[in-house]
Length: 486
Image 1 (tube, rainbow, N blue to C red):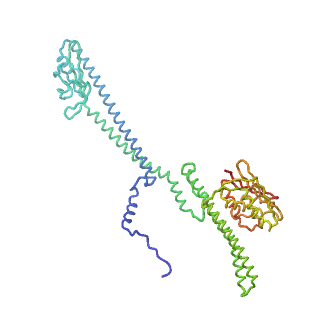
Image 2: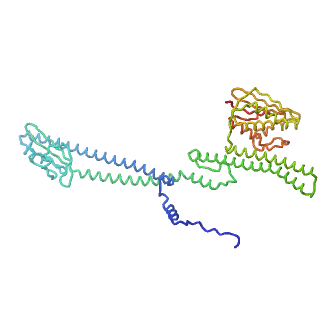
Image 3: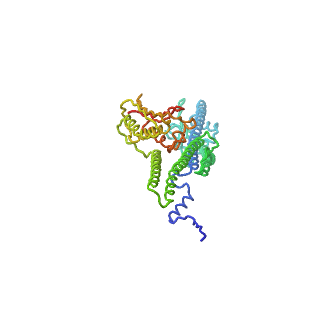
């Protein structure tokens, strides 16, 4: 073997899985409609809407056209009936009886496309002309004046009317075939059907093209997203041809998300670099001390004690650094739960200042406290003590040699303000925006890890308050923690 492994192509060991995969590849639209591609859903929905609208419109048009054609035919039959009555009256005026008058009227009214019949008042058939139909049932009926009847295989629109004038009574009936109307309706339905089919086809193709064109920016964004690398997060990498539409808004929001993600990744990288830098010094000191101590086979007890003292100091520094990093990591992951209990802020301030007075003495710094009596509060005692400790410790380290750190607790407007002031050199303007960042140190002589102020700010915010650099200058700095009182 040459050291390179050969990867076989992945296969499905289960035949059912193979069949399922083949079915999914061959029929992508099988399954719930919501699982179909958006383009297909938009096309089907658009086509369905167009089909319903056109179908309803076609049905309405066909019904309206049929009613209008039947209405025109009824009006034509009414006019023909009035003409027939007028001629019958003229014949009656000449002294003819009903049969003679009907015979004369038939010779004067040529109606090849209509069927006309006249009967006596008792329904006895007298005469008929025009189209040949079986009038016996229609002429003797006392039914509707206008109705549709079937004479053999053909359908007719029949108008029947009874007249009594000058003592002469008779029954007249006129019939018009419905075949021309049926042919018009059939032609109209065929035209509407083809129109609906062509319109649906055009709507489907048009919907597909419109959906493809509308969703193309989304496909482009997907391709752009696939080209992104986690280690190179550029800003504003997704683009759309129309930034003002919905897809442009989506791209803008996604770019904002990527910007925030890039900031988080950069912060993690910076945190790892800073943490590595902070851990390197004590580890190097411990390793160097051990190597120097072990370089000689025999050393005096004082030399071993001195080496162990150095190792112990660096180990304590490492322990504080790891604890602070762990606390910040848990805080950012919302893994720290506050144990709220009744307490007094003035006790925390006084006791913390008293405990740190030893550290202040080593730097020839004095601590002065001033409180507004008893200040009750509900919060986590351990975290609040750590916040005050970090503030006072920061002030001691930056105070002038032989200077003073002033700690005050004041209550006003339902808030408790803990202010810690030093008389050091202040914070340079270039560092004032970074003072609460992790591992940020503006003083070269400061030996801390730069985690005290970020932890203190988080503790204040966890209790619903704020921590800020209230003022700074050549005469010193003032940090203020504002906590809302219950």
